[in-house]
Length: 347
Image 1 (cartoon, rainbow, N blue to C red):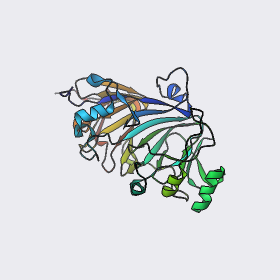
Image 2: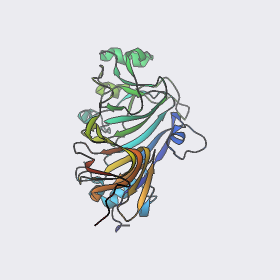
Image 3: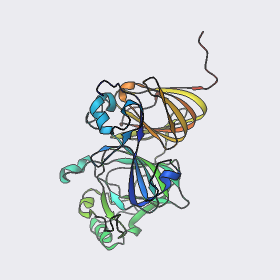
Image 4: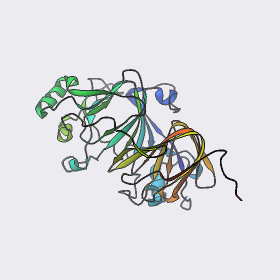
């Protein structure tokens, strides 16, 4: 195993049952769910103690992401990753058949007062939204901490929350301290720092899968929450070139999208500083795996490009790709797109 050189990894997600989950992970995103159960989360790329995604292609098929990180180190995660022994991103697909709990996450500045916590900055790319579906993002007006905490305890929090309608294609950043919730009827791609630290503020007094009320974390939440309206909800895309848009550039992660109509041959350079995660939003992409073969991504599937490969090459068909990596550096760089049939034969 130690002599296996880096190649593009198609990922096999970890599927997680949730009290608020549904069946869209199968019907919309092609996940192989058990016949029964409400599944809310597909951990596409995860290297956490709480759960691991696995490789689904090539010589390392079946291995956990942590095992691959241990094998390849910075050749996988990149030179800018905070920890050479851990994959620096967590990427999920979520299906909310019911409202998620009202919650908040800590940031790096909060960790000194929260033993065992990890910073959790995240963004959501809306993939599907039923008519009237919305999210909670911030408050409807600034609220005193005592009033917010009492409303949470009494179950009268809803009028204080800002409910924002959403539609497919929008991207929302949920920075640490933002009081938030995903509403029923929303499915989304979530890109974030590699953390599962979540403080529930309110959970509708509903039981979890074990029949018991899920724990709330109001004391911790009050230490980190910004109790005021959000300055923005949906983040406007920034055009970076034909078909390429920057969606979010946060300190811990960056998200870009690439739209390619028709049949195209495409390549771009990968900076050595970061691995890239490619999620196929729609269409199809046939990726050069960097090891003499190819792997196919269809809508709902995910691949990891090791930083050491330095280039992505693919043949795409009416594809939209979401590309994630560490923050601060252009991900889709020196993009070259050639329509299939227009290639120039060598002289």
